[in-house]
Amino acid sequence: MQILNMQNIVKTYQIGEEEQVVLKNINIMVNKGEFVSILGPSGSGKSTLMNIIGCLDVPTSGKYTLNGAEMDALDETDLAQIRNREIGSVFQQFQLLPRLNALQNVELPLIYADIPEKERKQKAKEMLCRVGLSDKLKNKPNQLSGGQQQRVAIARAMVTEPTILLAD
Image (cartoon, rainbow, N blue to C red; front, side, top):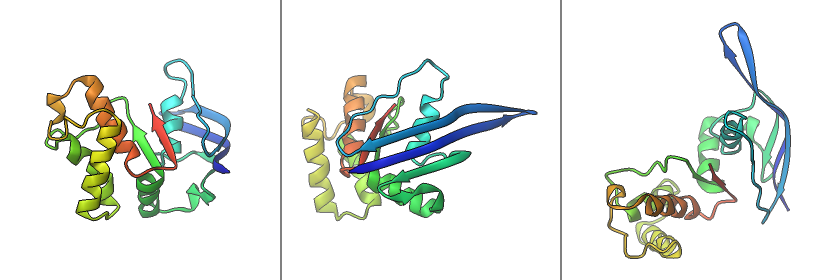
């Protein structure tokens, strides 16, 4: 079953008088259960492509379909819902909120999805257990090692059981 389809994706930026092409005619098709790795040197457009896949940016041209929905037809509210339900993202900088503990950081996407408190706490605990952090639920990010912070970010990205998981 196809979950992601990108056809002739182009992304350009206007820098002064010059148009810079970052992505040129990218075509990707991903089926459910597939693992895809995007490789390239620094500055080659990997993060730009990830931002488009993750609905954080839009292509200049081309067609992007996720689970049968055309992304260019959606407004910002719909895209936010897609990001929360369908896409889990782990960024280079883990984007953990420093005032929240590990459990609260993992709960965040479930709060946005209107999951009841008891259920979201249980799901967040289960996900932290799956990444080996059952003993760190109450720790804030500055009380965790870099590797532990990364696992909290992974747990947060996976807690909604997204269609796709992006890791930059």
